[in-house]
Image (cartoon, rainbow, N blue to C red):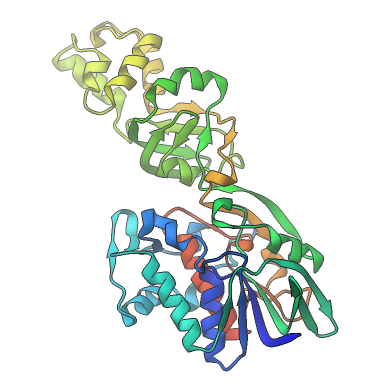
Amino acid sequence: MEKYDIIIIGAGAAGLMCGQVAGKRGYKVLILDKSGKAGGKIPISGGGKCNFTNNDCSADDFYSENPHFVKSALARFSQWDTLALLEENGIAWELRDHGRYFCQHSSSELVTLLCELCRNSGVLIRLNSQISKVERSGEEHIITVGDTHFGCEKLVVASGSCAWPQCGTTDIGYDIARDYGHKIIPVCPALVPLHYNKTDAALMAELTGNSVLATVNCGRYRFQEEVLFTHHGLSGPAILQISCIWPHEGKIHIDWLAGFDLTDAIEKGRASDGSITISKLLHGRLPRKFLQIWQRYYEDIAIANLSASQISQAVESFNSWHFQPSGTAGFSKAEAASGGVSTNELSSKNMGSKLARNLYFIGEVVDVTGALGGYNLQWAFSSGYCCGLEI
């Protein structure tokens, strides 16, 4: 049996961060990963340039059964600490819309950095390691990979979620948590496209490939970004954001005019040129195809001749369109997953289990889901750092 002080399951962002911090403290650390490459989803995130954190990062940007759980980790390793780490190691970054930070050149630079930090701290990374068994033997955790057994005093589960299975993600972390008596909050796709219901599919299919800057509302949440029409449903940043809320908060309402007040525009139009139609009034604000389809369902007559009822219907169709998805595009299209190991059974200081000694859970395997915009990677860094520092 090979013995280590700490074994980390998962060589993604959280596992690598935790490993290099713990290694610096003098622990003998082994990281195991089933994949042939370290870095998890990092290499393909952000279009290959990796949206690694956000300028505005607080507990309000995360979804969890316990909304306060993330506060401690984010305070101790914030977005500014992430930026400082990259700057100290010569990785250039750029700030884009909505406060999103990206690697200026390639996400592979970030993966290389994390791996180098681990190696410099004496951490061993063993890839292509399919774990078949995890068990407790006295005060030791025993991990079996093929014919080899690895023993450790402290076990860190950083195996990620079910999202993006094409990257080699698995649900092993949830299985380990259950075996040790932990509760798993139901796991669902998050940051994922939403499918049309049958009625909407007939209406929207022709718009495939078009995008609209819109305001999407669900419950108390509101996002104003692009909405993309696909063959199967709606996608784009605004929809990915709202997918974390739906179906918990009910119906989705979409303002296709992103705050442009159609009622006010009609009233002003009537005073100046009542002969103009609504489609002409909105020309340039929406794709031509969108307005053509709208005219099949609403009479596009001169605004001076519109009744109060017709105005009300038109305004609702543009400023408050009701969207009830039939479901999501599933884990294969999801950038993250909601749910996971219950935060009520973990320490917010070091991510340690309250049910089992020397067992820790970090990153996406935990019931913490960040909004779109670099928040999930920041959570991986923050939770990994705190665990490595306090383990």
